[in-house]
Length: 557
Image 1 (cartoon, one colour):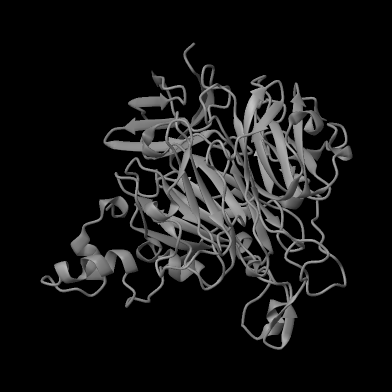
Image 2 (cartoon, rainbow, N blue to C red; image 1 turned 180 degrees about the vertical axis):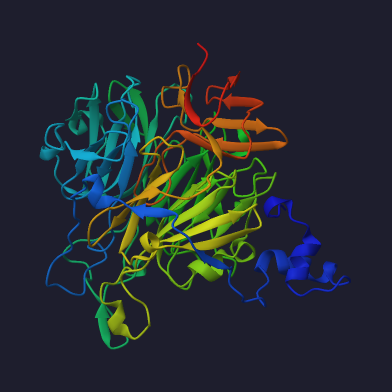
């Protein structure tokens, strides 16, 4: 069992009120229940970490919910995703906003964005789109897009950074009944990214539309509906895919997926495992065993909460919270539920450390959707950013004390021992938070963010934190691994510090992020070793001559 930052167990038990002779008696209860007798919340501070630059950047998009109608249905409040991607490969991040009308804004690398949706062919792509995934499906150097949605689904092939072509009809990927989370990974090591699309519930005009909560009629919980399994599609090349869900043992018995992300668990990039967050049914971890997946969610410890009930799982993200070289899993959930931080041990088991890290006290009151690990101040420790917003538009009328619009949450990582909340005007603005993407849109080494307000405009947050540390950004280009090289592990050593990050764009809620690997270095100005463990199995070390810049590393041919 691993404690965050290898924290001394006696110190943890002392914090729970244990005396020096109580260690053996309290060991299990303190580590697994998270000091349930200790209710003080993590300290908070107010700093100008982010500036809201949405208007100044030129983003004029708005997500609109049905006007004059209440309560809204579960379909009308599920929300949407967004993405940072470099559409034209000019080195500057662009922005994709997903909805009934999907828009692309090109970025100039200095914080300004311009709507080019019609010019690149998105004007004709219609449907109730919800989420997105980004990957170079044909290894031509330009990122392609899959849009998930309700009774829809579109594969958009990028033609040389000039326009998108709707390749759905020829792709072999059928329309999904209620497509949600999208993630890509090369599951069979053939150099082509394969696709997983989550599905949610069976819902149509004949389904129950509203449910009673006390004296108030409001939206129904997911338990009122049957779930649908997601689907795994093998990339056959030339823009075609084949359904291999059954062959790879990736069928979910109860479905209701809202979050999905691949990760190279066990330090083996050639075997990508798939973490799945399901809504009020057990979560799942499909471990890659060489030729198929094995469902290990319950065995691994992520299927249920610490009190033995399924999570109302929303978004999730993989990241090394305690810098022990093992990837941990953050999963967002409904109000009053713990938002688990599943810390991995060397045997592949996970333990929820939300209480010990201070997350439970800070996040439990809200309905959390998007989540991303990011090093906000470049100190070498991954912080956590979360979008919040209730699912019932008229929740305030129920007398529960909850509200529809809720503030975002930024939790700073204190050397793997605590996650403390940082307040600020841009973060405290109440939104109906859903999708969340992260990326450095002005290439200054500070990670920025893009959030979805499901009942309003996007929220573009520029990293304005003072005194950030040194940093290094790494763009990977695979050859045998496939150009994206998603799932590669990158290990950086600087003096006595060793940091492990994985190369990915997935995670969060219905969104896709800047895939470049970002390292915060603190006061260090030298990198003594940088090693890439490629999905192909190749291990490659490169020399880093200077920091505070982005470098590109190509897989050795």
